[in-house]
Image (cartoon, rainbow, N blue to C red; front, top):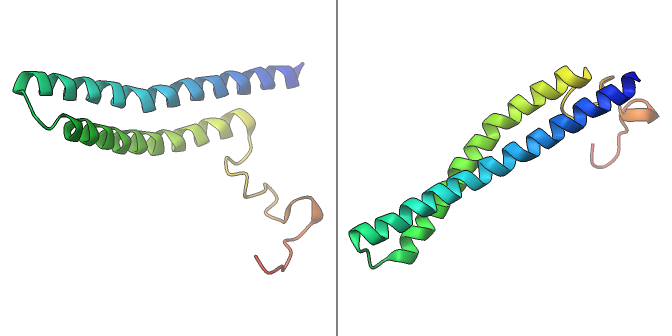
Length: 108
């Protein structure tokens, strides 16, 4: 039963992250495009595509900053839920995975 409960928590956590990421990406685009459209109408701007392009670029920057900030929070919350490190590239034992110590291959 404990495994099912943990699985449900992780599923809920994943769905919450998906919703938040969707909102973080969509909200700045929608708001800034609306502002750009209103500015074009109010100020009768001739450069409508330029204003729209700038608003999209600004929304990309805002979304990127917000996602970077939230990503560290997601990692902390994941560690609390699973008692495992959030970075899958670093195994908990510090070794090379299930084969033992890290190999000395050409890409190490």
